Image 1 (cartoon, rainbow over the protein chains, first blue to last red):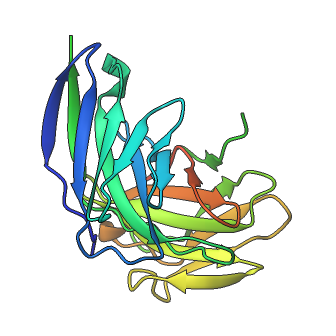
Image 2: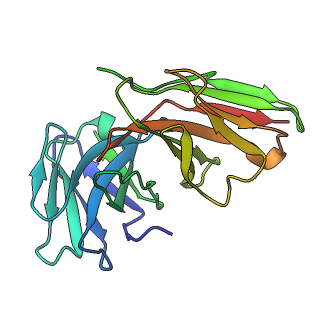
Image 3: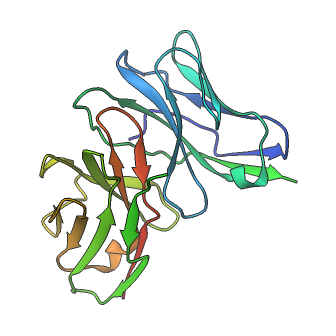
Length: 113
Length: 112
């Protein structure tokens, strides 16, 4: 079972920041937080991951609380193409670690014009 | 940008028939995976594959399923005798040693 809790749905106005929360209160010290999204029925798309520091890439920012029990994915300027289901996943990763991704139900983000 | 490809995009088969779903992972990746998603449900892990053998499999991946990397590029999922409940989107994914998995566009399998 997924070790994360996410709201089932959220709306965001186009051009505004979308802040997607995730609770992972039982996360272990060697587990990373990953975010993926799935647009319609396409294959899931990797967005970003982090261990304990905040991370930023060209798609999004990931803010992880100091106690690592929750995180927030930020899409700084949401567009209609960001409408998707967003999954927060915790997973051990490392050399030799090819552990599978365990998907929950995610958050359905609707970006509204 | 390199990507995972899957064929066919849609496969229709009759119950009891064998199907083979094909995937071409990203060329320098070492780990390969199959996931499935029944319509309206969560993405579920089936199997992971590394160094020409299964690394891990879920309880869904029973004796009716098998995987193979027949050459240096393809990665296949075979379902020996399909059932109605095998109807789903099947996603192949690949990764390097550490982190993100890259998913293909999926094959929609319809069993009639």
